[in-house]
Length: 296
Image (tube, rainbow, N blue to C red; front, side, top):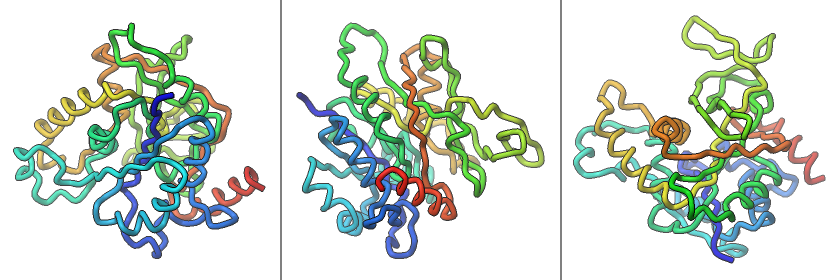
């Protein structure tokens, strides 16, 4: 059996691990963090390599908190998502940039160490064991006869991904009867409402169907995607203006564009597992209780 890799996007983790950084706060009965459960579920499903996407300035602390422990049970690689990891001609264009470049760049940073099918997840999201099993089965398929990029997304119902403590950003999906993705729109500030959920923008709000399927950045991809990511990132950097310099190169937006260009086929996998995560610090207690119901 060849390699099937789990990529964990963790570059957003801050450097003060002892200061209450949400992704590294213990949520399990023995001090486990969410990544412990994600990796456990992935290894059980069949994944046999883990790549952590982090920043260089947190490498030493990250290895101490989780890296060295995981290195004892599975092959581990580290890649670094940095602000200056962009083509030289663009570095002078954004001298004051402080915000990360987004999930698209995070995955692009992995191109030198990932040569096999891979699954992408967020560091602070718990997806459930069945999600990894389905993604693994998908990534084991042979796609040599296809003239398009074949990828998958594990979809979750919007109602199961909302926070009681504020707005969230979700990739809202359109899925056809064959379970293929036809459109995805990165949607900001979705909050719970009396009728279910609504999108807040300035002084206005629009109701949104809580039964909508959404992306939680759990994508099953293959190395061929790196070429598209690299070309798209160059276009992104070329066209972004200084006035819009906080914009990010995001996977849902990238894949939505590839869908429009008819370059990809995206199968949306269904799971009955409930997603949970720490969007806000106040979400932590709900996650602790959810973990307790699973492991106790």
